[in-house]
Image 1: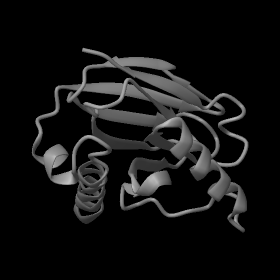
Image 2: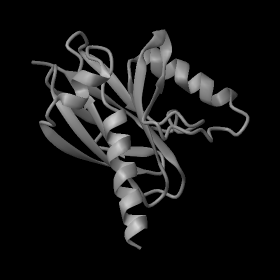
Image 3: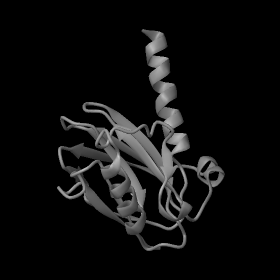
Image 4: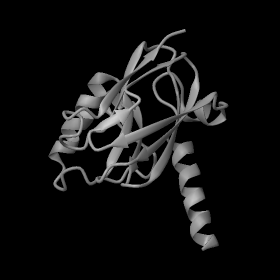
Length: 160
């Protein structure tokens, strides 16, 4: 039992650490940054709560996403173009969205790394992200085929 709990704790902290950083800062910047606040998210079947956020440029946030739905979801942060590119890639996958994002990030459009986690039904995942200095709005989304189109998306407004 202790080994299982230790494996879960290590997995969550690794996911959080590796998911840090995008656009304005590298992984080392986000990893060494202090988390300013934690935002609890709920991922239901085809929705996120909350739907919009206001974050200060350079602020490091820990997102704790709980999947209260009945199917797997992902939580990906990126600009609209990168999200669209990722959505198209997901549609073309033979397994219709079954992908491994356990590393906490993957490459999105334009060579940017998009912070991301996949959350199984009934589970919680943590993603740490630092808001870029050079953007005013990014999206968070689930790009598993049909999920974004059904409403699993939201905006992060980055304002000082």
